[in-house]
Image (cartoon, rainbow, N blue to C red; front, side, top):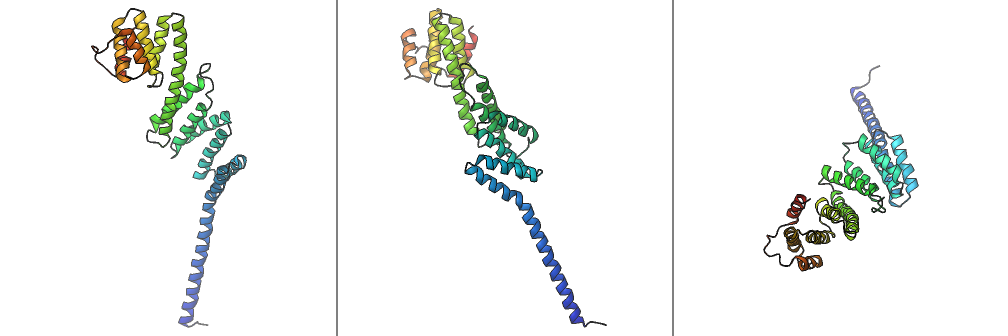
Length: 272
């Protein structure tokens, strides 16, 4: 039995349309399936944003377990580290962030992992006068962050943190230097003050450290060197109380060529 050509064409057209519709449904299902990790991540992030840390941690762990090869799993690992850090679980966060940096060195947001690692150490600085381990560690981590990712959005805060850390370390050395000075151990005191000038970025202790160096040089009879350092102090901090005090010791410094602090660092390295 033969069908008319028109009927046959209609049947073929119906089959073609049905096949296309089936493929579209299949594609839609695939698209929905592919979008599930993203949906799960958004839900987990909402939990985190609402400070539901434990629920968020569970949700991110589930993403890592269900979609281990996806980019969302890697993001989730990073968020889990952040949660540990936020909950002051520093040991756990430190272990996980080191593992993350080692395993995903080319991850597009790896700079954030370096930043979190530095913050973990920074937040544990308690009494640098007694223990500088976390102070030194956080300083090294922030410096590495800036060295590796100078244009990162986290680099600016890293630079600010370095200034604060250097101020803390300088304060410790200033305290030790004053102890030696009071004991009239002038060379030991001088070396500590020189360290404040040479090893740290300029900070609030710099003017006093320069003054103390002027004072020690004068005590040791090194009047010319005392005058040179006083000139540097006057050039950089003309209105500072420590320059006014140094002026009382050495008098006029106008005959000395004024230079910047880098020149002072070179001068101090030549003596002792």
